[in-house]
Length: 423
Ligand SMILES: Cc1cc2nc3c(=O)[nH]c(=O)nc-3n(C[C@H](O)[C@H](O)[C@H](O)COP(=O)(O)OP(=O)(O)OC[C@H]3O[C@@H](n4cnc5c(N)ncnc54)[C@H](O)[C@@H]3O)c2cc1C
Image (cartoon, rainbow, N blue to C red; front, side, top):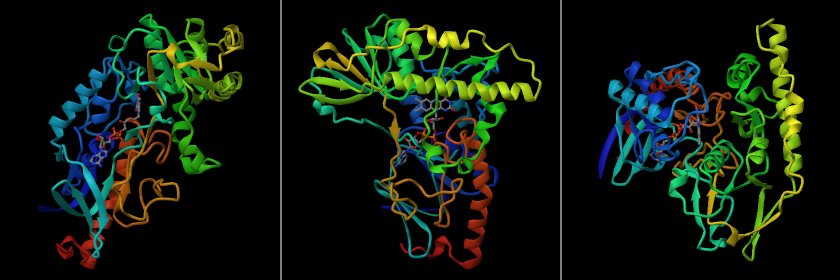
């Protein structure tokens, strides 16, 4: 086994790990990034072919990366995003070692961190865990309950409609991925069924501007999550689906998608769905009205030039038929493919440090834990609504830098340095 000593080890070479490395390089702090797959693995390998960022170009603000923006308000394709990220790797020479999976992080008796991989051991004074909130695909069901004949894949594995067999496709999960995949399948003339529970959505544009630009102006995205009445809940609020057409989920119904409620159970080869679709749509309308009301107020307060309130707003929402009698059962033999667009979960099983709450969530204040020298970065809503995105992760990395520097300095003063670690 080889041993290595460093000031800082970053685990994960996604945008969070890279943002941290950028600031450490500027401060000339010696460090390494350990990545189990390839840099930017999730953008590269876990998104479908036609994927485009839902955030606008002006929100791409990763330090050290010049995004090739043809237009401030356009949306980068997967290929365009990867090209910019690749160029940043070349330009900045980030110290990435891959493929190198971290299998265990623990603390030595002398306060340094012991980082184990297959065949190597690293020691460091500080550690930044940047493995993200989306480490492993999440399946809310035991997939073995479905007949073997049905092709099952997670949204992380879905590539394009052509790669799916003939026959009806069931997409489960009403987030941004589920919505976009359903839309793409429908456009390619596939027969699609779409199962979801909650379905908050917002239109892409509102009163002449992109909705995300409005939410930014209103200040929601900058509001620290610990200032919400229930900070823990705020971290887990699902982001609304941004829909190109004002009718949102209703447009899908109008265009021929058969919607089903939340998949509740499967029994004797029959899938059963909740009845709650009508309630979901009503809640989603309320969400829409609340968000657009905030924007209307902001426009009024600041006397901004904006197009008039969409006069048809209410009518439009009500115009498309509600799924009054959505089916609550579906026989498995009616579908050929099941796409699980049911999200991801974090995976910290390799972290053997007392930095988690009873539910396994990192106990952090903007990334700082109670274990001196141990930091988290890139978590969904770590500090505010920007934290887990290309827009906000750079700010959170910059915030951590002085804390890391003072931790390293304190270690030198107390002699609690790497020189003391037991080999
Ligand atoms: C479908 C989808 C669409 C999104 N769209 C947008 C968007 O439009 N705009 C936007 O700004 N954000 C978007 N996001 C959110 C976010 O920007 C991305 O999820 C982004 O990839 C998060 O970056 P990260 O560095 O925090 O984590 P990741 O990109 O997941 O990077 C973590 C890295 O850690 C590595 N790793 C994990 N475990 C280990 C280990 N034990 N040892 C070593 N390495 C390890 C992984 O291989 C990975 O490369 C989207 C997210 C999803 C899921």
